[in-house]
Image (cartoon, rainbow, N blue to C red; front, side, top):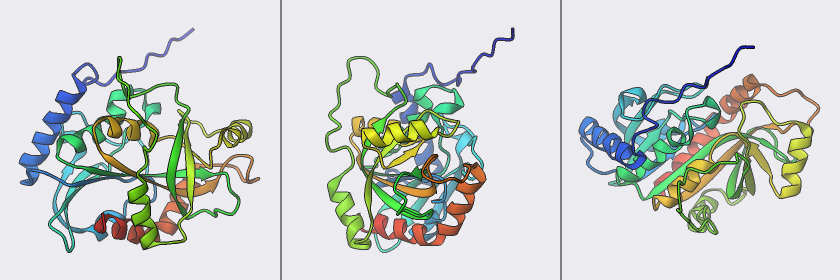
Length: 278
């Protein structure tokens, strides 16, 4: 019998907050921007928003920054951008390289980006993702504001006796701003499964019974770490497909990419307009 060993990230044993400070110092030195105001994590389908935010001050390969690695998912970019937001004096940190729990590197690398954003001075975080939808009325390409989440990963980014209130994790103030940009934006509850396999119809049904409207493989751990770091959080999901059992069609990553590309221009403009008004 062959035993498979998961290779841990070499930075996993470093103090995660020291590592975030190291990454923030690297970013400040490389971009010439001492402090950023807003961070965005761009999931599947959301990458085009960076082009609409404003002027790119600097673009850095993520794997050159302490604690970051190259993206493991097709459709995710491997860079970090510093952008001066049009019409403001603010700077956004756009994280295009996301580490997922299913990559087997541990929880710390999954939330390293948001901890780095906090260390870099950001007070606000926008988390985006591509996901499966449980509501048949939400066709592929529908953006949905996250009002709450269900963490089904059986883990947490918080270690030891670290107790953090998650009652209002996803900011009502930021959701209100989003509604001023598009009053028709629906809201829903996002459930994170560990992945990388897609959920079974029975698992999707279970998530619905628990109160979920959306299912995916990211976001909740990042949101918890961000709240612990003091960030105000807005979450937006892009429904790229109907979840298993909701539709008779088989699921595929290619479908996720195609739906994201089709919706890209519209959702990118929406996200850029929200970011400019925060």
